[in-house]
Image (tube, rainbow, N blue to C red; front, side, top):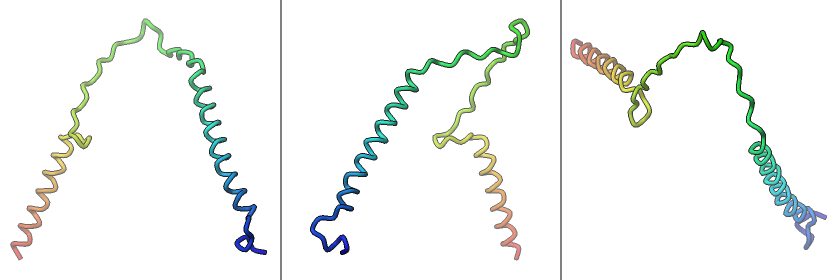
Length: 97
């Protein structure tokens, strides 16, 4: 007899119980992993391959300021100039025809 014809379908009730239990298990395992990761000791500091007396101080470069979209303005302007020059060449070629 198909499941639709029965007033009580055990398969439907099984799925109704299975998925919330699976979700609870996933949340339990995730919280346990996060807790274990937070309780873990930090890794020991790496030993440097360069002896202390041979190390030199390297000055940090100033970061290139980016526009609001995260692009380097100089690169963007060079692209715009090349694009505009190409369009002007196309327009000049079209006007010669």
